[in-house]
Image (cartoon, rainbow, N blue to C red):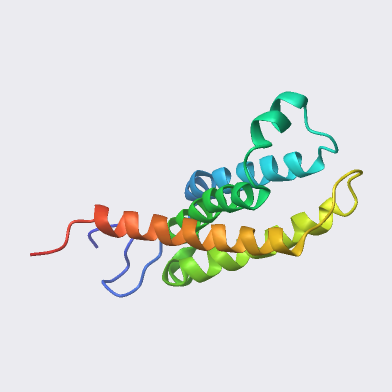
Length: 147
């Protein structure tokens, strides 16, 4: 037997996803989602933030915010979610981000001076889609093609 990891060439005994890979790939997703949640919990943002963001449409902000989340979620699905998650990484990442966006809009209904907006959810979903596809294309270009 050549390796403790392989019993034969067809049976794999090592876990597909290790605790280290879960932390490495899902940690940034959870941290960023927590940052989004924190931002949604603020009833009245500080004056410096609101004046800086006042010139940019909130839909563009949602698109960018969820673009980053979509990219992180794709990365986590591709490398830290096992074989099925890796094969369906774009779909799983976008669906997860859209559901998180829905929960964020519902959460804002309970925050004073905030409101949930269905168009924000559209921007969130579109941003997640763009982020996931962008990361997918970036990864695909980074891998050298076999000769």
